[in-house]
Structures are given as C-alpha cells and as structure tokens.
Amino acid sequence: MTNKNTADKNTADRLRRIQARIQAACQRCGRDPGSVRLLAVSKGQPLAALEALAELGQPAFGESYVDEALSKITALSGRALDWHFIGPVQSNKTRAIAEHFDWVQSIDRAKIVRRLADQRPDNLPPLNVLVQVNLDDERQKAGCPPDQVPALAETIVQSSQLRLRGLMAIPAPRQKTSEQVAVFARLHRLFTSLQDDHESVDTLSAGMSGDLEAAIMAGSTLVRVGTDLFGPRPG
Ligand SMILES: *Cc1c(COP(=O)(O)O)cnc(C)c1O
Image 1 (cartoon, rainbow, N blue to C red):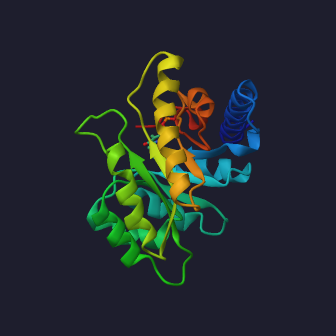
Image 2 (cartoon, rainbow, N blue to C red; image 1 turned 90 degrees about the vertical axis):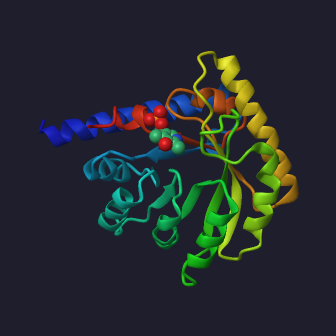
C-alpha cells in the first residue's frame, strides 16, 4: 500500500474504535448511541487527515486557532461540513469566526456575545453557540463561572443572529472515572436547568479522548475527540 492508503486505513480504524467506545458507553448506561455525536478536533492536523475523515462520513470538525481554521474551511468548502470554534475567542477574531463557523463552543463573556451577534452576516443562519463553563474554579482558566451562566444565556437569546444550543466544559484532568463522572454530573445539572429556561438548548459538549466514557455516563450529547482520532498532534 502507498503511504496515503496506510494513513487512510489508520484513520478509518481509529474512527471505528471511537465509534465503538461511544456505543459501548451508551449501552452501559442505557442511552441511545444516536444521542451522542462526535466532533473531530482537528487543530494542528494536516488537511489530508481532515479530508480522510470527511471522506469516511465524519460531518463535524473542531478548530482552536482562527487562521489555521480558515485555510482548512476554504480548502474543504466543497463539502457540507459543520465547523465548530472551540478555542479561546479573542475580540479581534470575532468577525472571522462569525463569518466562517457554524458553531462557537467557547463563549464566556458578554462582550464576545455582542460582537458575534453584530458580525454574523444576515445571509447566514444563526450562529449556534455554547456557553463554556469553568467547573474547577481556576481563575486563570477560560470559561464562565457556573453562577453567571443564566445571565450570559439571557444576553445570547436577545440576538436573532445567535442560537443558544447549550454548554461546553473542559474539566481539569482527573484519573478516576468516578471523579470524572462527578464533575460532568455538575455540568449536566447546569445543563438541565438551562433547558428549563430555554427551549433551544439541546447540546451538552463534554468529554475528550481521555474521559468520553465518563462524560457520556453523565449525559454528554457531543464528545470532542482529537488525539485518539488523529493520533498525536504533529509538531
Ligand atoms: C484539543 C481539544 C480537545 C481534544 O482533546 P484530545 O485530548 O486530543 O481528544 C477537545 N476539546 C477542546 C476544547 C480542545 O481544545
């Protein structure tokens, strides 16, 4: 086989393994495997790796750096893919995000909400947004404190250019599954209370390569997987 064929076969194997992990986790807690979607976190990965996954039917990709993402979005514009921005949102990048992404998962302050709402082009559907929650009280970390989620959600739903879809979190790594589940369960409680207030809320983005089983057990509807899908990030 050529190198490209070998690489594509490895990609297909890794995708199947992740899908099997999602399915097994759902079965263990009695959830419908169709209720958990997979976001391929492609930051730092070469275009060919994204193309291989898109070719296998993977519909959604997550990127953390705007400039890197824009070149991939342009190169793959012939395919119907959903692009999620998952990195810290800088004010000077909101226009590019509003114009080129379908989702932003990392909203944590009102200023960014207002800029994205103003800059979302009228000819595009509303930008889907998730509020990123800081579950660990680490002041240096991104994310909105849990008690400020309702107010930020209110700001989001004021705009017809934005659609509030739910919550995202990146908890500090924990070794034990039981500890991972406990943190994600706190996130899930915030999520259900947000659902009580806003009927557009349907997405809980939680779980990565190392903790997707725990996140699914606690109610995640979208797992974000990089390393275990693409292999280690190059460079
Ligand atoms: C990089 C990243 C991931 C993927 O993490 P892996 O451990 O490589 O699966 C998920 N979510 C966010 C927000 C990330 O930045």
